[in-house]
Length: 433
Image (tube, rainbow, N blue to C red; front, side, top):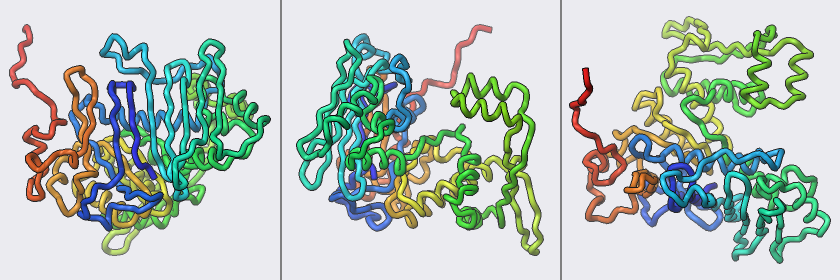
């Protein structure tokens, strides 16, 4: 599980900002929210509120960027890392970005830190607590020679040959964890860390993410139970009684090969395989609906409403969150969902998931006054300071002069006392006609 993570000089974030899943001492909704693991009490949920362009999505993108740095290391040392430092300052474009994360894997707490520029990973380290803090490795990069130097902690058993192999496979724009994934060596602590990124931390879900394809492929591979997804859809009042998936061979559309070569960076072996085969396998997705008189009708997925399509994806995500231990970053969680369905999704997650986590951005303010559903330490707010950089803080950071147990959180947020709301001008617009 995620304990906390920090971001510095990344996108709209200038100074170090930290989001923590560590629970406060409050016992409010403890059984629904709190998991005891790795010697810490952690929350399952973090919801981020804030005005448009305040940096909410940047937080999720930074977490996803860290995941990609580990799991998808650059293949050439000339490739630049795809991010921008804070640009509204004369110094920060010349300075490095830093992302740190503390997480629990198999009841052991790890601390991971990466300092980087667009050209290279400048410094990196991994520590673990078992029970006391010990170093796994420290890495520094010789920027002049573009060479990685790795030093292992005294408790880590690794021979010199394996150490040199790992150094040579860790390009200056690769993380050590990414280099380890390209290297045929065994090292328990590095495997634990990379397994956490691969198995626990899932890719960022945007409003444009193809959730239908993601969930359908998981059902196809039996990593998500179709029956579980149907059950979740029934409980959400969608009248869907079955999901039908058919595969069919189709000719490759004109221009498709060029598109995936230029736009999707598809590996050359996959391109050659498609060219040789000359056909692609397409999935046909259909929902079966059962009416009150027990009659069954089928409807192609493309003909379903946008809300049904969106919740089909969320039903699959919810099934994964309940069955496995995983974390999903989700942007604009409320998109295309009725407020009651939004509430139903969150409550279903909180009441059924064990060690999974959701970190999501949202504009759904109405649930803020629902003390039977939300804890203060699970609510986060982004705001812009005078330098146009993002600040991040929790509802739990406010003292009793702003928020008391009896305070209506929605009213206080709408009043602007908590920040995170747009500072709008009047309605009159002077346009020359």
